[in-house]
Length: 470
Image (cartoon, rainbow, N blue to C red):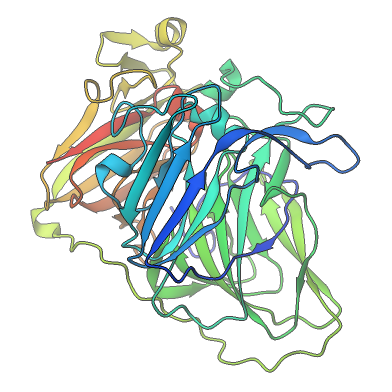
């Protein structure tokens, strides 16, 4: 259960981060961009050779895309990889054909081919983009980027800053280990890196000035790592989760944490109330509950600025549908599989298998409602978990019956998490082992949509399904 004391439930570890300010808002009603995923090299470890990565436009992360609410994005994907790819626009509610899921919403983009994504951004907030083809490896090698959609009237702050959190699994030569899809990662916690990054860089102090107010956008783009952050001697306000404003901003206390599973985001308003020429640590907590220093808020020598109101702004709500609790149909969602709990499952609609058969025959280890979907299946032909009627309300009763946490992500929609404080609107909910949640959903976006665990190895090993809205 998520509490104010531990606002988003989870745990994991982190090693290193850096920081980048966001570019100014684009003024045009349509933003045109070309994104070219390709092999590249990137300086990760000091005093060692550059790391071979895959990157959009030779940048890790990829280019920051920034628009105003209701502006249009026209993005041309030119595939310079040697394998198929797509781009999924994580958290953006858009037409089904633009969602970037091969075999479900589009054909995969072959090496050397192109595809144009063209859609309006109806929601303001913090979003991101990444492949949805071969994505454990493609994301794990560096293919991800930030998408910001600004409100018509953004809150007044001194700086707007993003921390795009990720990790890499490197060998002693600072190169990415090629062991994607191994048994341990697919059946346990997923691929956890040994070097954590922020905006592609290692840790360094984050320079601040006493008295300033910043908007801090946190994005977890890692394959499997869960970030669990505490700001010492500061009291940030959480004003939005997964791009959607909280009805009432939540101020964190000294022991409160912001926890982000893979795919999840949080917008904070941070008042820099420390003393000049001092440092205050931001801590992360690993899966064993131990704290590590993520970075320091490093105050300069300048005298404190005159600060304004210490109350957090309330952001304007995005246009979400009205949930009708009286008419809502209840839908069970049971997360199963993985090591630690015996299980049976069906693979791509086939016969029921026990855990050993599922792994030996299909390399499947996880399920939703007892069904596993392989990445290479015809998504339209298998595991339509829910067939929903457009405009109807549904109450998804989710239950994690595994020994591992799962951030469950639904494409094309947002849902309200009724079992969390403030009942926030989200597109990804983190469920701890044996945790239950109630998700209020209005099925207002027609098409066939993916529902999956955003620990990408869990997705690859079966924990995904389709939701049909007609």
